[in-house]
Amino acid sequence: MIAKIKIILIFIFFIPMISSGQGKYCIYQFKALKAYDDKDYLVAKAYMDSALVTCFDIKENAYTWHVLGFIYYDIYKNIDQKSSTSLAREKTIEVIRKSIELDTISEFERTNKKVLINLAISYWNNSVTHLDTINYEKAISFYNSYTELYSFANPEYRLEQSEIIFSQALAKIYEKKFENTLSKNEDYFNSAVKLHKKVLSLDSLNYESNMALGKLYYNLGVVYIFTLEDDIDMFKFIEAQDKAVDNFKISLPYLKTAYQIQPNDKETITGIAGVYHQLHEKEKFMTYMNLLEDIKSKDKEKDTEPKINKEPRDK
Amino acid sequence: MLISLKIVSMFLFFPMITIVGQVDDATKAHNKIKGIYMYQFAKLINWPKEYRSGDFVIGVYGDEELYQQMHSAYTDKLIGNQKIKVNRYISSAEISNCHLLYLSDNKSESLIKIKKKNKTKTIIVGQQEGLLDKGAAINFVIKDSRIKFEINKTSVDKQGLIFGQTLIKLASNIL
Image 1 (cartoon, each protein chain N blue to C red):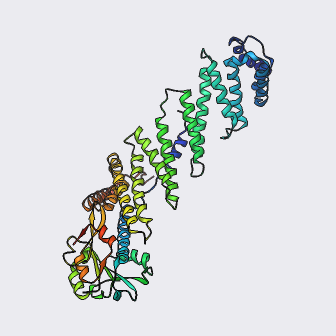
Image 2 (tube, rainbow over the protein chains, first blue to last red; image 1 turned 60 degrees about the vertical axis):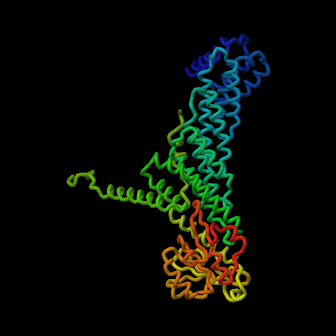
Image 3 (spheres, chains in turn blue, green; image 1 turned 30 degrees about the vertical axis):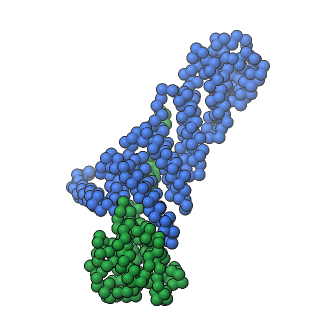
């Protein structure tokens, strides 16, 4: 019974081979299909290699590359265990793309693109797992592969949301590196700023990026002052104070936008108050400190309000 | 899209950076700036011979946090060959033999009394509008959101001290 099913499956694969204009019978391709059906993917790949060498006319057939693409896809999934370094994944993409290129009647388009989308998602997943202060460059590379592949497989899909999520997550890595660098490497600062600005170009009212930019500029201002040598040259000192003030001023509009988006967020209000304090604007500082106190007392009131008993006293 | 919620949430809950400074650190930053200025005043004033023996005394009256900042940053540093000593004063009666004395805003009313007692010896640095007119030699002012300083050159000249050219150049106002 099983043997019969296998034979049927081989024919199911084999029929499109003939219907797709591949008139001549290619024994290696037939064997490849059988091996694939037996889940013997490496053998299937070896037969397909032989088929491509011996049966010249199959090279121009979309079906050939479609089959080879699926063989590589299964090597990636089942033999390479979806490893982020799998070469089979790259080969799958290369081969499936070739199939799409040759598939003038879109016969295999749906399944080919489904594979590409799945692989695009695998790149996204790899970018997530590599997003730390050590491997973040690999994460960027995986993310770029994700966007490139997803856009190809589904040009209508809008990637803005992924762009925002990835940019903010990557920006946090740069922020962390900036904070952890003794010399306060401004390259990391600039990279984080660039990413948050990119997010704001997609969504100007994004709370996280407005807040992050406010914090970044504020923190850079503070860094300029706190890292001053106690016996610094007077002119350098004046220059550093100027730079600090410039950064405090740049941080303010971002924090205020964040405040407009989330007017009850205590951290945002504290940040604005902190900037005004740094800028010696006492009245405005006090205004925001009072606002903060109001919110804190409202929070306290909420906490002391009687709450319903979730469980009856007498069971 | 098939991205799992788990994966997205890994991104979203990545810890956000915190504001380094907030409110308390603004005060620390201001004190750091004032401390650097005080040290620079000490360096950039030409002190006559009679001032150049023993410790170089910087007094702080009325600002505990500035005292702490200056004490940890400048104690035992050198002005010429004099070691810096940073003193904190609780009452104006304690103040004597300072080269430089910082008078906080809330202690400005003591200026005349202190000045009488320390007539020729001390450069008084204050932080209140119009304090130069009342006899302070240097006054911190806020201009363009920055801490700057103004100087009373006339009064200092009378004390036989000379402001260095850098201080004159950088002062926001000279009396």
